Length: 152
Image 1 (cartoon, rainbow, N blue to C red):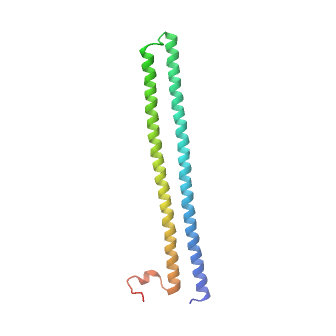
Image 2 (cartoon, rainbow, N blue to C red):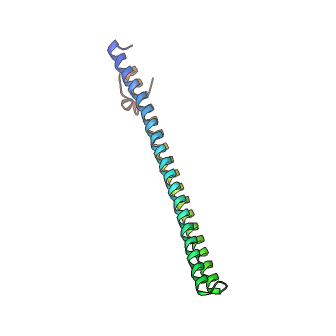
Image 3 (cartoon, one colour):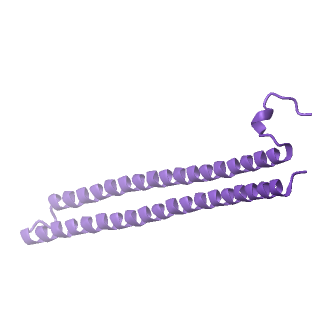
């Protein structure tokens, strides 16, 4: 058994290692929260962009209809083609925006997974340090000094 000082130092080392593991976990959680918040922000921006696209398409259709009414072309194929083209462009733009939103979500999910893996690695690194500290406190040697040697 070690002296009081050795036991105190071992206790401090163990406590610091546990605290380090807890803080690594908390940091990983905070990073994940940040990525989730960024994803929510991107989702809100995407909704605004979709609304803007729809608004612009409706304004363009209204403008075409107004011009057609003023010039006597309300039943013409030009108006029908123009309105159809606006609808087609709107559909294409919305599909593109949907694809981008899906990719942003995939990127965010990958970042969250990466943050979780980093947090886990830090926690397990702390567990390894703790076990090494305990081993060293019990044997008076570092674990690396035992590499290749037979343990009685």
